[in-house]
Image 1: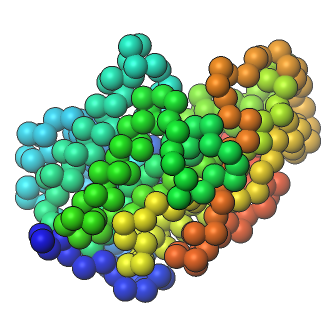
Image 2: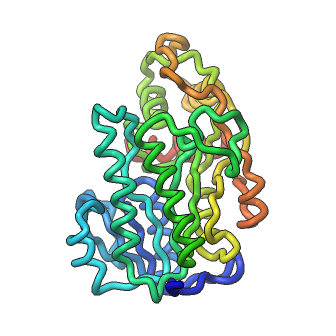
Amino acid sequence: MAKWGRALGEVGEVLSGRLLVVGGTGFIGRHLVRRAEQAGLAVTVLSLHPPAAGVTRAGVEYLQADLRDASRLQQLLAVRSFEYVVNLGGYINHANYQNGGREVLAAHFNGLDNLVSTLKRDTLKKFIQIGSSDEYGNVSAPQHEDCREHPISPYAMAKVASAHLLQMLHLTEGFPATILRLFLVYGSGQDRQRFLPQIISGALAGKVFPVSAGEQLRDFCYIDDIIDGLFKALGSHESDGEVINLASGQPVTIRHVLEQVIEIVGRGEPKFGEIPYRTGENMALWADVSKAKKLLHWQATTPLHKGLVQTIEAYRQTG
């Protein structure tokens, strides 16, 4: 069996060494990079495009590569080694297979395959793969990690296949991977095209905007809690080879979240029911988080209202 390095022993152990954040210029990545640098880790970011102006950090190394380009990855990573890797690479896209879905599959699954094949394995202590609640598809809530996934898009399928690849590598070669399935993460700095930032922006502008009836049950988790969970996983040996939900575990309707935003902002008018539900949409998507509590000794602590207040204030300041 190949030796892939030893994972850290106890949850919460102080981390030291080098961290590679794939997709570190995105929403979650930027929060992770900032926290990692504050914790004293030497951070390298690998992204598809150069970071936008104003988001770089002086002590961080920034590299660019398409994960599908194995030769480019080899060029960059053959001369570097890391104790920790977090793979936030890829992009959310629910295109069907014939309409761009094949490219989504390649970006996520083939990209992961290239990354794992290129990393130096003798120094690696932990590899975190970021999964998605979309992997569960129409599985009944609360979604638990031991259920059979039911992906209904190439994006979700790629995430499921990536999780299975890493679990196979753990079983056969001792690869120290943990797959974290994130539910709806929100907070400052999220792409303005995502659901909650669109709603907040519309409310701040005092707009009237169409929305669905909002009866869907969803699980919103604040970004600071997610980053705490990521760090718990980086320092956990017990979680090797496991799939773990990171979420609040508290179901809330989309309508309730919208009404909270409007109340906090003090203006804006959602027109409920003017947008139909998505075909095949799971009306109840919220997590069983008992495994995260057991293996990572982690649970979300930020109440939804507090998280929304902090998020909205960040958007007020950035305009």
